Image 1 (cartoon, helix red, strand yellow):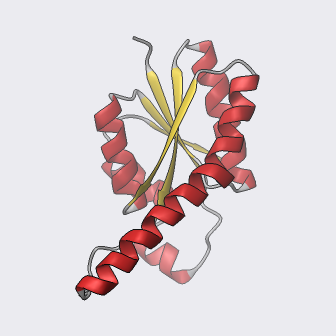
Image 2: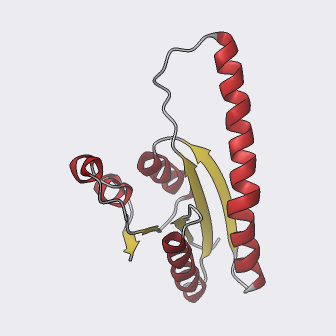
Length: 144
């Protein structure tokens, strides 16, 4: 079974460069590339049963939309270029969820784009790449 490389993708130009960089490295190593798109979601709210049902329906719609409009075009492009690639969309804290996927897949490395967020909150709380670097169980490559 080939090694698995994880690349975080959100449809932005910087994450596109990251995916292309990761795809080149995966191909050189004869590894499979697994693209992940994480929808930020917080389970910490008190909702009624009706609100929970609506939220579940919205989540399903968001996952479907992210898959068809963001991940599938990138997967098709990479597959057409001869790369072995798979993908998935999940909800959760971005860094923690990526780390969970790494563990589930037995991935060898994670590729993420450099954060362009220069807000005070990002500097205070940390960006996704910096949080991922702190909790990751495998090497993390941050692509500018």
